[in-house]
View 1 (cartoon, rainbow, N blue to C red):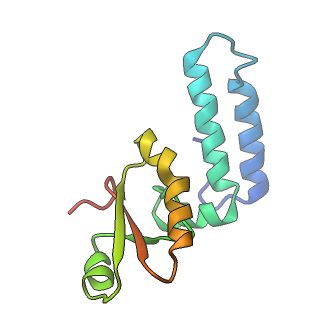
View 2 (view 1 turned 135 degrees about the horizontal axis):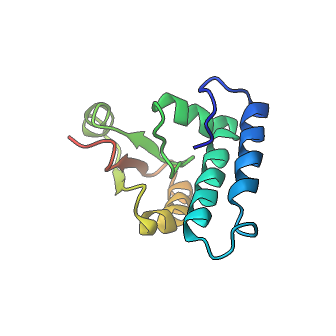
Length: 134
């Protein structure tokens, strides 16, 4: 989206973002829905690549990223689910979510709050239904 090299430094990412944000900004392109969508896409890309932690997740997942990150849930995958959950004596609550579902994004803060409150009593995990299909 930002057309930067995968090894680009923060300054290069910031410059690419500024250039594209100015080009597609809604104030410069009134009544242009596709321009607004492009602007939002550029902003989302910068939000991910401009943050060191989010970029690590993005890079680790080869370009895809877990857009609903959590400090209180374990990211479960088809590779680690059985070894972590099935062989555990702990009680687990597992959310299956989709990055494309607005409802999943809307409940994420509540999920994290509950997971934080119950930390130490119940384990919480998340499975991305788009990237972790069996």
